[in-house]
Length: 131
Image (cartoon, rainbow, N blue to C red; front, side):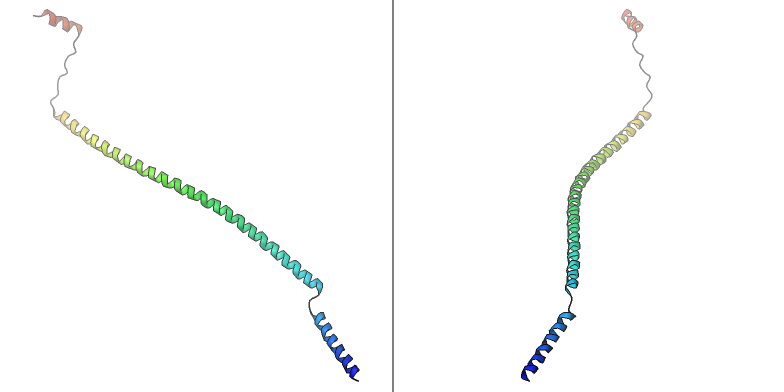
């Protein structure tokens, strides 16, 4: 009887073990899960590669924009210098225009002069003949 109880107990343990194995995922299910996980890993790797390429492209654009900023700053400085020159020239033009207006007024107030006759060959000979 003891042997029989022992055999029945052993059968029970085996039955529980078989039930536990049968209730878990099968080998094909695990292979499918592994294949799915591998696809996800490959997808993530391709996304990482794309992000790295985008980061490199953006870094290059940033470097180019910094160069352009330096050029813009230099041009702004040149423009400021040119504006100073233009302002100085405008002031000089304004001063000269005022001088011109003042000289025109003085010339307008002065009596009109008769123009001196130009010396011709006949007048030169007459002046020599007259004592």
